[in-house]
Length: 350
Image (cartoon, rainbow, N blue to C red; front, side):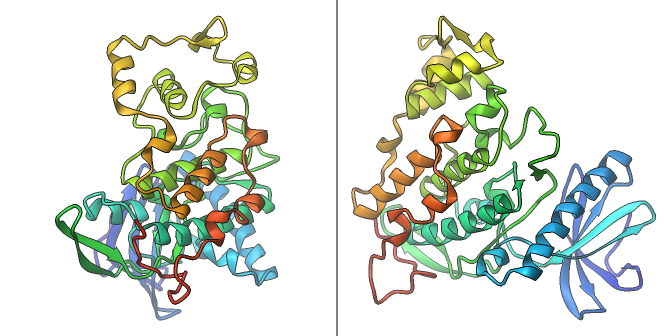
C-alpha cells in the first residue's frame, strides 16, 4: 500500500509513522480515532498468498481473543491481542495494541550486552506462560525468536558496567508480549516440513521427523541462552553444521533419532558424517563448547538456569521438558533478595 503520514484508512486509522516492514507488507503506527489511542496496524501486501496467510493469522488471533474472553488468568495477557481487522482495497489490515522495542532490538541497541539474570527470569516466566496458553489451545507458534517478543515499554536507565568499562542500558520494566502468529499452526492442520527461523530450529525439524509443541520449547531454550550471553547459540546457515554444533554443545544425537530421520544423507554408519579437521569442522570447534562452559557465574541461580536450558534443549521431543514442569523449575522459584521486587529486579547477580 502506498501511503504517507496523515492518510486515514476506513475513516478511522490515521497513519503516523512506519514501524517496520517484512515480506508480508508493513506495520505502521496509527491513531485510532474511534478508540482515541495509538495502535499498530499490520498492512498485508495485495497478493493472494499473503492474503491467505493473513486470513490464517486472523483465525489464530480470534482463537486467542476467544480464550482471553473466557479466561481471566494473567498468562493470556502475555500474547498480543488483535483489536480489529478489515480489508482495504485488497490489503488485509490487522490492528494491535502499540508495543515497544523487541527484546532483540533492545539487545542490539545495548551493544549486545546480556540481560541481567533476574530480568531473564521474569521474561522467561512470561514467555513460558504465553506459549503454554497457545499449546493448551492446540496451537504451536513455530517462529519463536527474540524479534517476536516485544517489551510493552522499553524505557531504560543508563548505568556504568565496570566489568565491560562502558555504559549499559538497563530496561526498567521487563513486561513483554508474544507477537507474530502468522506461522502458528493448529494441531489438526497441515504441518510444513520446515518451520522456525534457523537459529531457533529444533533438531526434529532439521531431521524431518515431524514436529509438535516441543519444538517451541527448544526455541525458548535458544532464546534464553541469547538473553544470557548476548549472542546466538547456533550461529550457522547449514543443516549439517547446525547438527555438528548441537553435538559439540549438547552431546551426540541419540541413535533412535538418527534411525528415524528422513535425512540419512547427514549420517554415515549411524553417526553424523562430519570432519572435524575441515574448515567448517575447525569453525565449529572454535565457535562452540559444551553448554555448561558458557556459565558466567557459579552462583546457584545460574546453575538452576543452565539446568533449565538443558531440559529445554533435550534432543528427543517426548523427553523435552513440558511447560507445566518448566514453570515449577527451581530457576523460577529462586529469589535472590526478599527486599527486591522479583518482577522488575535489576540486580545483575553475577
